[in-house]
Length: 218
Image (cartoon, rainbow, N blue to C red; front, side):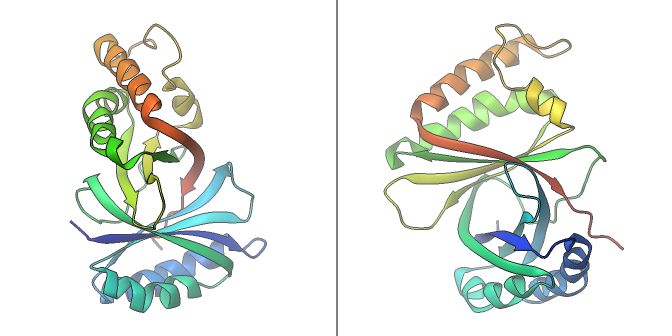
């Protein structure tokens, strides 16, 4: 498992997504790989972001490599105006740092942040992995990863990235209805609802934003 990820929130020049994508594909990604890392994903904001905002997720073999190279390499992408970064440690997902491969045209990626008390972190992971995720993945979603921020602070801060087939499918999985959606596994849905309520009780605050993954292949 890769030791450390960098989650870089970016703002780009107007109309700059094609320029940035080429820069990431041709320059940034190869430079990261040459230093033992991986360019995991370039995301454009969809809901909860301004039109010129997005995200770059990269993986690094250790803190030393990230410190020495990330700001210069990733922060120097063409078309990028400004950015801020956060360091993340992987947990039960992802199992590796391979680049995310787009699966379908309409898919979206939810980036959800949670803040909770540090002592509640082990239970939070168990509720997610064993209670919530089985239903979501049985219903066509994919859990990309759950990371914990390594930045200092009084609360445990974590990021969950989940892939959904569409915005409509993301809305379908909100667990608000007492009954499972048509075609869904009712048993897994009930378990996810119960685990979701328990997880929400541990969460002091949270926010979710939706993105699309940019295709970097030529």
